[in-house]
Length: 173
Length: 432
Image 1 (cartoon, helix red, strand yellow):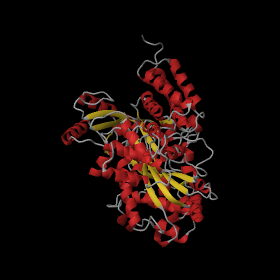
Image 2 (cartoon, each protein chain N blue to C red):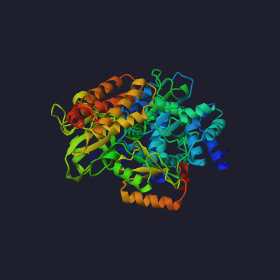
Image 3 (cartoon, rainbow over the protein chains, first blue to last red):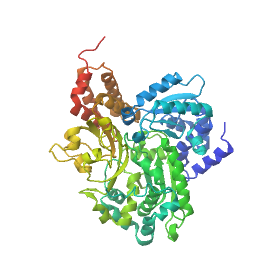
């Protein structure tokens, strides 16, 4: 389990942003990179690999990975649909959006669709209150949602049939 | 139309590029500061401007800068807090997405004032697409001699990096942010020592919000005294307000501090009134952490004076009848809004986001969520309302960082102003 040469070059560039001896600072960005490289989640093997890159103990990676909500500690579908449910999104209909996705994909929050394509997750405020309701998939914000827009998005993602991760959607944008 | 100091050129095509930004007068503050001013003179202008932290706390920014330990032989750091996560707040996202060079210009001028040679922009991980926008702009600034060694041929050198977080509201608290930037869990630190003495890597550090750093640009360009002429009293300058909820025109608005709240909600220039021709019920004026106010108290103070968009006017009456300007996350609720349900969404948020370090917050936010869940679902009892208020009181002031207070205040205020709705939601006895 190692990074591709491109990802490794990127990791080394990230590590160089921090002063000598403070390479642990690169941990959060490196975990994003690792999640993007390895199927969208952080297995113990992946975390151990990141620890070795930064010359830190594996426990220092585990305790951080489990603290932050963007790191997935178990496998997820190719597209993680993260629906915001905090006040401003709720005021403008996020519950209807969430129900629609549940029915359409026949899954509950936290579950993955039978074809392994979609995992549904609820998230707290993503700073899209003025364009609520919203969901995030990869790095992309889908805003001012209606059930029709959700249908279109799901069809589009199905057709594309690719894993959406934060870094990959960045490279493709 | 109020003055626009930050968003003046936001609709200019190509303003996110160096060339267009520069043509519109961009980077003038860097030229002025580095070529004609001393670092202390820059700090002095910020002090004179009366600028207050735009992230939510409203602490005088120039004073915060002046606390930085200049006797230390360690490097100094400026860290921009772009971890915008306060529910109802999306102004920093708008500013960074559309005007990345304004933030970078502010970072350079501010870093010069503080004597920082390396600075970081800590941005919430969910804004990953903005990381790319900022990094492109930073590359342009390096290519044009505004970052790197000997900026504009002066002795001053600066490196600037963007650092993504990974989903944690608590990292907007400045010491949790620094922990996170060091590659650790976002657990807030005990203070003192304050970051100005021992911040990033135990070095003297200033942490400022995106909008605060951007505001340094017009302050240096126009002078602190001129900036201070805008606004009312100790609320000087302009403020970005994120308007959301049941209004006709949600979005980010730059207002001159002192604008009447009523005008902000109902005029076409701003929110355009309540949607669907409904009546106004309540407003959360400064992000989810501040007390909610019913219509009569958000439009006028308890003394009957028109409520203004200033730090002082919004907090007039204390927490009994007032609120706070906070981050400027302005959430409007119409007459159909279920206040119990809204409070439940906030309680769930704070429970989810508590770092777990202090027991009152870790346990209390969980209990508040549970009680509100049961009230909202019709299983609550009348006594639950008092238990809820009691739990909130026991969190407030008993935690290392203000997240506990931020979780308690919305609960206390919602029950204070809308007690009847909580009573109506509660049943006398548990239904079996």
